[in-house]
Image (cartoon, rainbow over all chains, first blue to last red; front, side):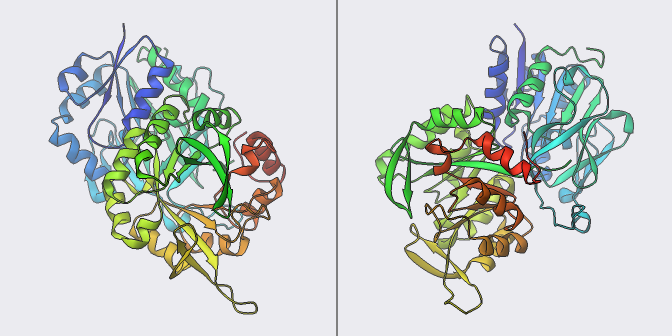
Length: 216
Length: 257
């Protein structure tokens, strides 16, 4: 029986992530945990999170989770969600915090001056609601999900990936930003699959069976 | 090609049942909250909002069980408001499965609560609900004040200035209800909606007065709302959420279909 660790570090609502995983994988063992041993033993790891980056890193340090998370991100199917995606990168403008540095790149605030649509109407920050996720190519995590499907977002910062090869999807708001990255056994998304109805549940179902390679 | 406008059915819940009143009185039973939530999810609702209007403190815990049950079956964002007075109330609702928590009267009594809750849980999950009523006389420039206690008490606060203040204190979204319109089915107060939506940088949800699908279109195109909230037009089967979304899309509004 496959086990999935949902990393609990005090940042936001993990219940919905766990519930959504239980929904798509009734036979899997879903552990909401902050225990390094359980994370190390799990077959797969989900790193969720909402809130601010400096708090995220502080809470990880408090629970001695930095090293176990980096190890998991290097060794097994690993899904980062929202803040859990952003924290994988080198640096965030939010609180000028260093991230885990698992992936090269930076996290930036949506720049107020650029936040107007083609009609001149002001775009709100946070970027909140359902937006189109444009896939850059085939990946096992996109199986059964039509290109440009809408997923639910809520965030004020976005990832600027250090290497274009890792961009698995982008989204327009109003400029294209990286809404999903794929690097070896890591897949990370800015949106919330656990709140994105059927498309989101499909992505989570894909993660449950993903072997952690780009070929699937 | 961009962010979709949202339709948010609203479920007023008291003593474990969904009800709907006119101008906050004359409550009418509309059914089981979990069943209704599932129906709206199937129809393509973009989010759901629950307002706990339970009067007696004995039954306050009921909403937590309802949210737990909904969150295990419905995988779209859930907002819960009503009776939120302390950071601990916010925590309990988030733990039960809410994604966002609405703060209304307590924000007026203690604005610091908004700052504390958003610092603790992130502004993305703090929705400040503003009940506004027109106070300007005919012929005067339009003015709206913030009301509390179900629209009975004028706080003397200007609604637009209050929305700006709430944004600065950490609100991630504003749920704006026109008390003059709530339950009347004559459409949103578009002047109020536009005044607030244009004044703040966070998303604004228009609420109060929806009677037909054109009202939803107007809320976005004329009121500049980022999302529209409605209750009775959906509860009693007049329109499905799906019909409403198609109607808005036909008027050129970006929707998730």
